[in-house]
Image (tube, helix red, strand yellow):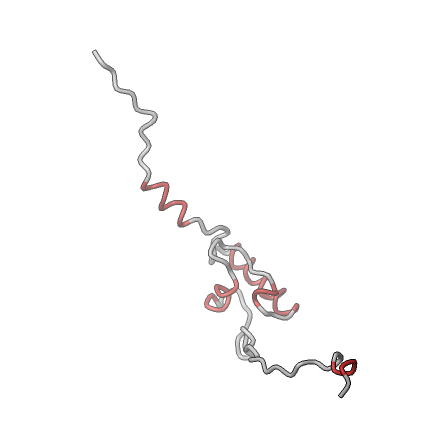
Length: 101
């Protein structure tokens, strides 16, 4: 085989096909919290379609379900648990003044 012809052949690497994150039995619904929570970051943001490996239609349905769950107070809009823990531990003494007589 000529070198010029070999350039156009693709290498036959085997790759492991990942399973889709949403199986056919799962219903995308605002009440299905176990499914919805997989597509939200630690900060409470909706993850992108590329990260989730979803189709466009699935991503739209997930986004709508997350927004509905937020409005119905099933999910928080922001997840600031770490900030609250840190602020409670810090003791603020800047406002206190001791009078000396």
